[in-house]
Image (cartoon, rainbow, N blue to C red; front, side):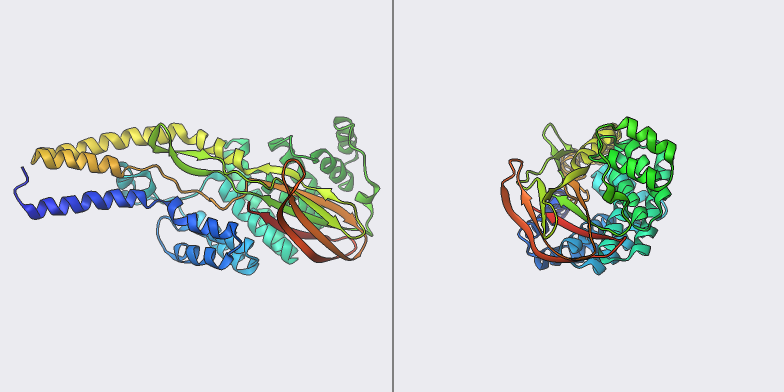
Length: 414
């Protein structure tokens, strides 16, 4: 029996502290911010995320990623860049885990280990920076991020990461960036690497044919024409007097992590339903066009978690053994206290639900060559049947210059 009532009360307090700590998960903390963003209440979303992103702890990276995305959606591009630059620096720091945090992850929860991000998330940091810089018209800064994407791509490829983890969109975006700078050979190489990562990218055949010809790789150009006989070359691709409008459309929300239905200690990915599936562009003096997919973020996130499952299961088995040892040490002095310790430790052992939860479900593109001039355009969200969903970006004006690309980034949230 427990001889001291004070000790019993102290342990009961510890029991409930462990229980409530487990319940106050990452997903609970960001839920209000997600809801506020979906309602286009940007200030409320940023108010939730800012203090979390500025807190120097083991969870800081994940909150920086969410905060940077929320700032981008809110139109605060400069602040978004600063946040993503901080996230990139933090993610690249020395791979070090304190002994106490690793031990705590075994005794309590995997969520005690410092969050470092999945491979496709780390590459995405530079893609978001590139998107921001491209929308701002800061091509030189975007080129820096294109090089960073390539550095990470080479590193992770040597680590034998899966193709979906290498983030084909980031490679494709770097190709767009090189093309915007008229570095056509680098653009071709990046398009080709995107194709090798994901041959199903919509319109990739057009990109390979066009970039090979612009890079003057004529033998390669002929090879791709044979590979994609259905592609009809557009003379506007090679017209130096034209500019191009590029819409980068982020659709919906990626999947969320929740405890698996059959094992609360392990996370599972659950898709987030969305009504808006594609974007339609209408522009004065140009054709109406709809977006086409480049990257399925939902698919990559789900596959990445499945790839990690073997390691996660092994860690939780080791954690169960650690809990048994700790409880047995207490049980040797007091049977009831030992039993309660084992119960409390297992209740506190929750699935690690941290993730970059502000990512979209898919990333899509619209590209249209245009003569130099000022244009008014609208973007409208559509469901799978082509019916407008109410999400839109209307009454926008864009200036197109000869030989230049103009980038617009838009996000649907419902």
